[in-house]
Image 1 (tube, rainbow, N blue to C red):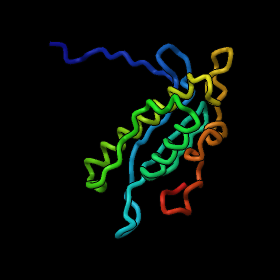
Image 2: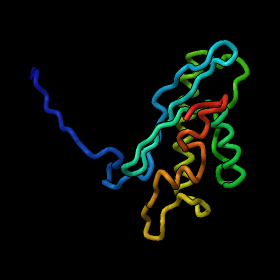
Image 3: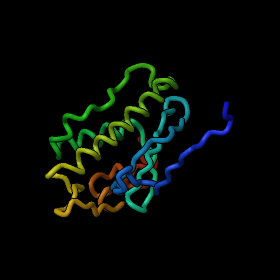
Length: 159
């Protein structure tokens, strides 16, 4: 039996898809943190956004995700079909539930960008040549949710 096996490594730059095209936006929620004390104790989710060569992260509570979804849905009706993770009345601080919510919120954000990058009414859609000219500024203008520092002085999250 051959102990040594041959491995083929495929390397490509971060943000590049298998067909060699750059993904215009990469978004993930790698972790969540517990903040506050007593009645003000809550979880905040770290949202990492990469647009071409710009990368930044913001921390947001679930309520901020919900507010963003509601406001964008009013402006862009095509987002109404997106499944948004439901509010939980009990178990909000259960570690398993928070981990599951993190997965759902990450999937939601990826779907949000997938829809908005292809929607004709979206300021984030591809140009006539099929290329994307997205910037951090464009995404922050699309929704203040993605702007660093926006919610840092409120009770609903930090920048």
